Length: 338
Length: 274
Image 1 (cartoon, each protein chain N blue to C red):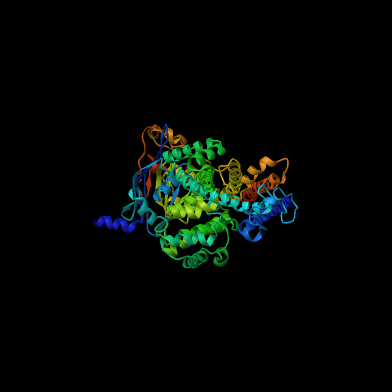
Image 2: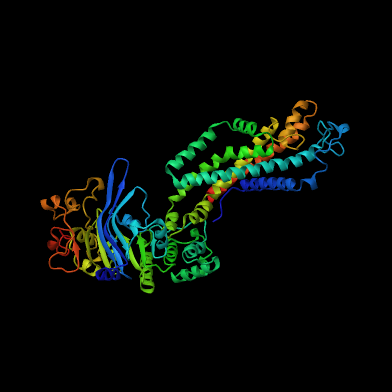
């Protein structure tokens, strides 16, 4: 009991051996294969991986937004409640109120025929039972909070706003009920670099001012540097490396992470080719028996191709996890120049 | 962002709206506007040609004023249009939403039923329904409503399926919006343009069918003033008193044409706006 309470005090959201499978007419495709992850209160946990790694599917599983063809396994604990086994009704009370989500394409996530004010007020009306007028007033405050001109934007239609403004509106509705958890699914991918930085700064403010924990999903590892507290690197549905952001960027302990960091454009190496990772993510229907990264890994041996490496604490470290047989041999940046 | 449509189209749009508006006013204020009682017979004035004093559009085989009958006929026509489109819309919304939201076997069953209704020739089905439930305008309106409900059901279902995939609907779902709010706030307003267009087109169809059924003697019953019924009685005097057929025919033609044109223009206008 004591460990249980202590544990929930340290996490608002916890994935325990989460798996997601999609069963089609002919085949079953496993997209997420046993993911463990802890989101601490008021912290930012970045879930990073290539497209198809299972990031968005994991995020959608939290809010029960997966299509009916999806089968989930494991648990997603919000405090002590397993979101995967909650009824639709109790889930709806959490969705949008305690746990909310911001999506990738801000222009498509707003109703084109509804004024911004009404859309932001919408959440307040059914979650907090506010009347129309009160909700609009509150919405205006929220829009001001995300650094928009509340008075003007309230009456605007989505097509009158820029992409960055729309994403701010989306964030405003997401934080309307002061949620404990905000899931941000590539919220900056569709935006310009300068707007990206502004949105990250805004999310950072939300975290500090409202104490909202953020599960930040991105394909862009360098982007989360300095923003995330913890980073989980996802590859082919499994976490290959998990560490505090500071440690991870200092020195990777999985060849995949290492190569991702090496693939970052660096002003110091201007004019040189970027270190791309050869090959592509394996087809989820034809997963290799051993390490999924082995076909693309310069360090791969027969052991890697034969045996699945489990997530473990590499020798000589304390806090981090790596799923590589040779985690200890991944020297910082050693592969980058090779 | 202003919709870009040609000035000519704009003029036509206003003309149709003006015509329909006038027609609606005439229908509502029929007793005030009509020069005579549409039912009062004046046998000595039978077959007065248009222009005769007191009979601007002539008199029919019972000496009734054609203009007054056309004015009161507008009531019947618009009433049929409104009520049957209303019925079709309501039935179509319910089935279309149910099919689109529930999907699976419910969807298949409902759409099969709708396709079955659509596969009958419209007038034939209307005649069947009216023969079973009796002659008269109320039966005609109900029949037309049921017959045209699949047109709405299909649109509503298709739009529901499309809009359901829209990120903003999923987003609303992610924010905990209850289903009925999603339907009323996100689905219905965004499918409104297509529904409005379908309404105007169906309105025109309903008027044609009412006229056809009344012409066949299955709809409005004499001495009720109805355009279709006027055509029916005019067919015996086509050579001697062609105005008896001409004016009601013109009224039907203009009205149906206006509604169809309005539907087309709205379709264009609303599509551009998207």
